[in-house]
Length: 304
Image (cartoon, rainbow, N blue to C red; front, side, top):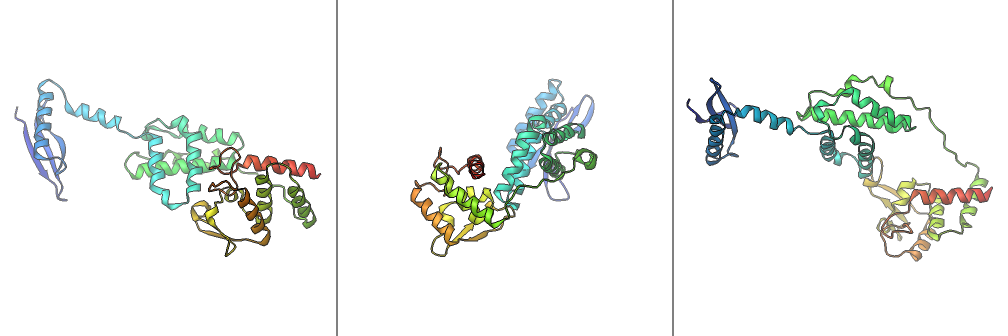
C-alpha cells in the first residue's frame, strides 16, 4: 500500500493538497486542504496523521463526514448571520423588532435544530401560537422573516430548500379584521384634553411629555427616544435620525411656540441625561410607554 501526497491544480487555478491511499482494498484520495492556506509542512503533518489512522484500521472519511454533520448551523445561528448581513438595509428599530420576534417565538422551539432538518410541520405551530394570542400581524411578520432566513441559508449552502415554500399562507395565516383606535377630532374636546393634561398632578416630566405628544402629534416611540442633541433651539427644529425612523430617512419636525416652551421647561428639570423625557427610575433610560399610557388614562378619567 503506497500513500502519496499530491498537489492538485484545478482549471480555476486553485491548488488542493490530496493524499493518495488505499482504504479497505480500494484506492482513494483524501482532501487535506487548499494551498497556500495549508503549507507543505502542514500538509506533510496532516498526511502522517492520516496514514497513522489508516494503519490503525480507521477510515478518515467517516470521521470527516461526522465532523461535517456537527458543523451544520442551527436555526438561531442562521438568524444571527441573516440579521448581520441585512442590518444596513433598514433602520436599527426595525431589526430590533424582527430580532425580538425570533427570540420570543421561534428560537425557543427550533433555535437549536440544524437549519437543514427543520420542516414545515415544525414551523406551522409557531405561527399559529403567535396568532392565537391575537398578534395577527406579528404572526405574518414572523412567517415572512422565517422564510427569509431559509432563503438566506439556501443561498449560502446551509440548507437544500425553504420549507416555508410548502406552506399555503392562506391556510395558516389568519386574516386581520382591522381595528379602529379611539381618537378625538372635535377641536373643543382636544382643548379639554390639553387642559386636563395641564392639570395633571403627577410627575412633572410625564405632564410635559403628554403635552409634547398632544402638540406635536409625533409617534410615541419617536417622542420617547428624543434626545437633547437632536434639538436645535435657534432654528426651532427637531431632527430625528434615520435610524430611529421606520423607513430609515431623517425626519425634521418644526417646533411651534408651545413645543419650544415645553422643551424649555423640560430643560429646567433635566438632570444631565441624553433623553429629554427620561425614566424616573433610570436617568439614562427613556420614559416608558406604560407610564405615559397610565397617566393618559388617568387624565381622561378625571376629565369625564
